Length: 145
Image 1: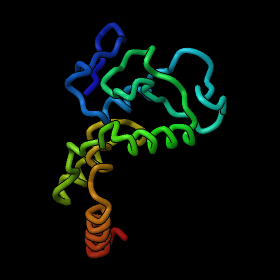
Image 2: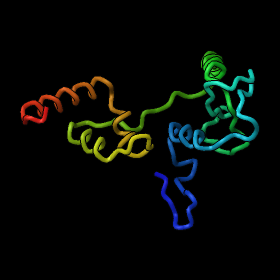
Image 3: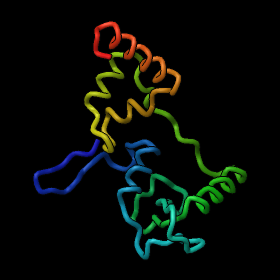
């Protein structure tokens, strides 16, 4: 979790203590040096931040570069075929109960990478569907439809 200090700077967990997914979110908040162009093909469209050394724990700004989604996908496929890289572990199983899901939804701020959003997005799609059906069933029964 990233917290704000009184001086306006942002502090968070050390790099070694966060998940690979969190490293991707951190990288998206940082802007790589140089022009906003794909480092491989020069495209200006659909850019994502890439870790040049393929080590997502290396948050050094010099290790970040812009890639278009096409080049990023192509590199990812080549790395997977070569046996490089690691699949992202899902460390948060999402909401186990309807109460957890509703609580996360109420606490979540749209567009924020907060705990509520993580719970919502990590909840498997089929479980989210089941929760949505139950919410609507309860709303109809209580006259809130």
